[in-house]
Length: 611
Image 1 (cartoon, rainbow, N blue to C red):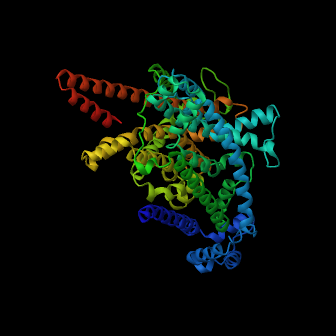
Image 2: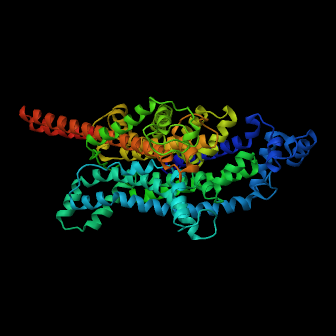
C-alpha cells in the first residue's frame, strides 16, 4: 500500500525535475537558438557605442568562456549550482546570487501585498452570495462582476492609478522602492484583477453548496449564519485551492509590466532585462528562482487542500455539489452584445490607418466618436478593425489551453510538476524564447501565451477529476458493474468539462492582455496593427490627455468578458432546467406504470448520471 502511494509522488517529482532541467537548458541555449552571436549581444549591452570589432568580440568570448560552446557553459553553470554559486553576470560582472536574492525579496513583498488586496476584492465579490446563502434566500449563481475586474489590464490600471493618485492628487509615490507607501499602487494594480478572478471562481461554486440539504438542516437547527458560511467555504474551497496557489505564483512572475511602470527592482523585471541582453547567468538564476517559488506554492496548495479534504479522497466518501445556473438574465448578454457589436460594426466602416496630423489626440466628435490617437488615427476605426485579430487569436489560445487542460487533468500526478513550472514562467520570458526561434510575430506570441496559460485550467480539472472519482455515487456505480468507459464519459467528464470551460472563459481577457503585453515589448503583433493590446500600449503614454483612446479597448475587453460569462451562465441555466424536467418526467412515468420500486431505482440512476 505504501509503495502504491509513493509511486505517484515519485512520478510527479521526476516530471518536475525533467521539466526544470529542460527549461534551464533552453534558457542556456538561447543565444545559439536565436542564431545571434552572444558576444555581440553582450558587447551592445555593456556599451552601445563601442564598435563591434573582431578584437573586441574575441576578447568578450575569451572573458565569458564562449569558446567552450553551449554545452560546456551549461555544464559549468550546473556545477556551480551544486556549490551554491549562480555565476557572474555577463553584463555587469557582479555575482548573480545577491541580485536574484534581492529581486526575489522585493517580488515576495509585492506578492504578499497584492495577495491581501486580491483576497479583499474576492471577499467583497462573494459577500452578497455568502449572506444570502446563509439566510436561505440565494437564487442562482454568481454574476459577471468578477469577470469584468479580470478584464482590467494590469498595466493600464497601473498607469491610471499612477496618474490619478500619484500625479494629480499626489497621495502616493509613483516610482521606486523605498518604503511601505511604494507598495500601495502596484499592489492595487496587481491585486484587483487577481481578486476578480478568485472572487468569480468562489462565487460560481457557492450556490451549489448552499443548495445542499445540510444547509437547510443547519438553519432549522438554529446554527448561526457564521458557522454555515464557514462550512460552505470549507465545502467549496478544496477544488479551488490549486487556483489560489497558481494565482500566488502569477502575482510574482506576471508582474513584469507593473514593475516596469513603477520602476520596481523585482524578479520579473530582472528576468526581462537579462533576457533582452542575453545575460545567461542572471537569466538562468532568475528563472530558477521563479520555478522554485512555483514548486513551493504548488506544494503548499496541495497540503492545504489535503488538510481540508482529510481522508475523503482515499475513502471515496465525497459527494460533489451539482452545478447551479447563473442568475443572469437574457437582457444582460443581449445588451452587452449590442453595445460591443455596434461599436465594432461602426468602426469597420472607417479607415484605421489614415493619419490626420491636425487631429492628434482630438476629443470625441462626429468625425471621430471616440477621438483620435497620438497620430491622429480614428480610435473607433482601430477598435473595430482590431476586434477580429484580438478576439480571434485569444479565443484560439483559450480553446487550445482548454483541450490541453482536459487531457492533462486526468493525469494529475504526471502533470503536477510540469503545471507548476509552466505557470511560474512569465509570458514575457517565454515570448523572448519563442521570438528567438520564430522571430517577433502574432503566431510566436500566441504560442508563448498558450504554453503558459493551460496550468490554471489543468489544476482546476485535476482537482475536479480527483474529487469526482472519489465521490460516493461512483462507488455505487462500480459496485453494480459500470464500466470504466461509462463512468468516464457519463460521470467524470461531464462533471469536469463545464466548470473548466467557464474558467477558460474567465481567462479570455487575460489571454488577450498577455498577447498585448508581448506586442508592447515588440514580441507579438507589430505596428500599425490595430490589435487591442497595441491600442492600450500606444495610448497609455498620453492617457492623461486622451483618456478615451486608452479606455476604449479596455472597456471593449470588459464587455467581452461580461458577455462571455453571462452567456455561459444562461446556457448552464437552460441545460439544468432541461435535465430537471427530464429527471422528473422519467420518475413520473415509472410511477404511473405501477412499478414503485422501479421508479425509485430509475430516479436514483438518473440522479447519479446527472451528478
